Image 1: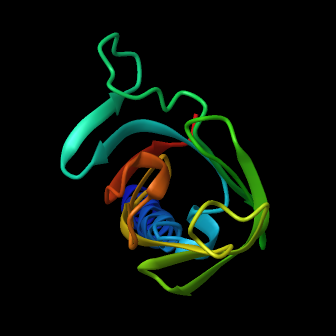
Image 2 (image 1 turned 180 degrees about the vertical axis):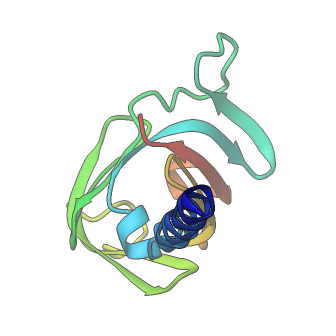
Amino acid sequence: MRKTYFIGFFSVVSMFSLLMGCKGNKVAPVSERIAKVWTASKVDENSTTVYTKGATNNIRNYASFKLDLSSAPTVKYTEFDGNTFTGQYSLPDDNTLKLTNLNPSPTGDNGSITFTINSIDDNNLKLTRTTTSQKTGGSTNVYTLTNP
């Protein structure tokens, strides 16, 4: 009788633990997952890979590139050439990141840059710029970013 009681109690405790563990598997919203400092691990300009972190044969050096979204809604955006812009960011939807009121205003962007969010997880963010970049010769850029 005692053995049956112990097995039953163990089964109830195990089932309760399992159910409570499932609760923690919720995926955080994009607004929480994106709120980090991101650096470039790979950059494509017009479908040509121009930068891969750690490579020695990069066409362009994106080692200085940084997208700091850690203090919502403030953004600090540092381009590959080291120029830094400060402004605000928003997520009009789960697939769009919009930088606005950038100061100083990046060349040809009227103070705003918009990206499509291709994918995001806890450590990786892939963005495609929705307009061409004058700074990179009018290319459409895809940024694969990591959170160090």
